[in-house]
Image (cartoon, rainbow, N blue to C red; front, top):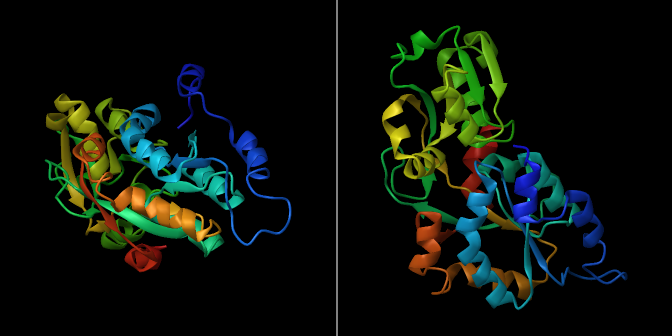
Length: 296
């Protein structure tokens, strides 16, 4: 999802090129045993409204600043791939990724560490727990009632690196219907975010879209009128929720402080959790995402 000039001005974040330049100054010039950045840079995959998501993360970022004793900056990435690039280059130290994005990034850097995720609250489209689903949605008023009705229709995916919005549809759904998406649907394209996929369905620009249940729950919570306009025609099995990851090259003391910011009593405060609309943070490791790796 591309940020328009107004949004860039409001968020006031450096470009990836500037961050990469800064990364070269975050550690001593001699060969250091680990990374000790003077400021921590954090990023997220663009699931919807980036400015809104950053605002929701603000209490958590404040917890990080207090725990680390250094500034915490945010890089608003224009795409899933840009977050991976920033992590691999050292321009970003900590990020919230999608499961498939994490698998891709860790394939390139085995030191990348998934350490935390979250359990969601129950809602119309999202069950309670540390998992979610890929949903195939259509407009409630359309004549599409089942999968057969979708043959030859227009489909929106999210991003090639999206778990629920691309990976699961291409592997799990395609296997179920016995053919690739491009031969089942008449048109397949990427919207750039879950929010854009939902909006394109409701605007009639596409007939159906694959989105994450937790993303759809967040979208309809912010826009309650959309809940009655959407019908789910397919649901995947459970997918582990998005991991928070840090670069494995960070010094151990800094890693411990980051973990503490997520799991001490302060991070479990209602103001932190309510902003994110989650029930609690939960510890995770690489093995929790094996099911996603096996799909890729």
